[in-house]
Image 1 (cartoon, rainbow, N blue to C red):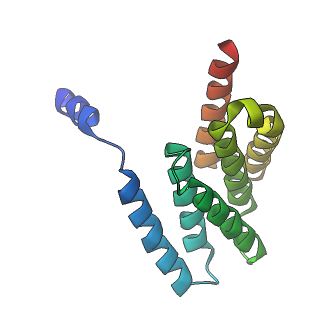
Image 2 (cartoon, one colour):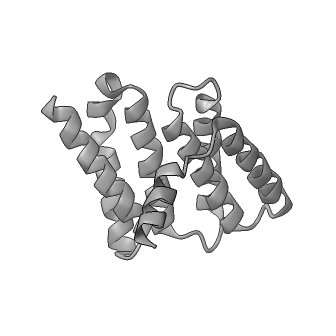
Image 3 (cartoon, one colour):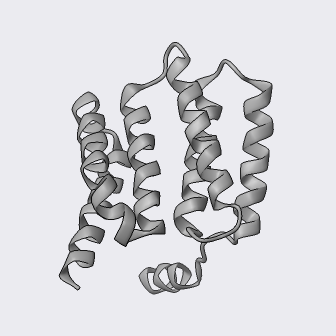
Length: 147
């Protein structure tokens, strides 16, 4: 059974750019149907950022980042928006900017990214997305500075 799971993991592939864009399109429609709901906005922002970090130099990436920023700003205006989630998304957005152009954006956004993740975890120490993103960011920066 363990061998089967290992083989399945080897063949599991990340979604294609088109699959991700289709998912984002569906989330946009869902968000439009529920404009006062935080959940669809969160999912839309997260999907947009996942696309942008997976395909940092794709033609649609700037549009995804603009959309994510607008969605995060809209979420911040809603009652019931989780501040930990907002800070996580803000940190993720800047992390994508660093991935796009490490030489130009690394020093510019490094401290902000760290502060957003720290705030997110102070507000909710169990925010698994913030924990994962912070760990990936720290590891990525260690690798980048070791070169």
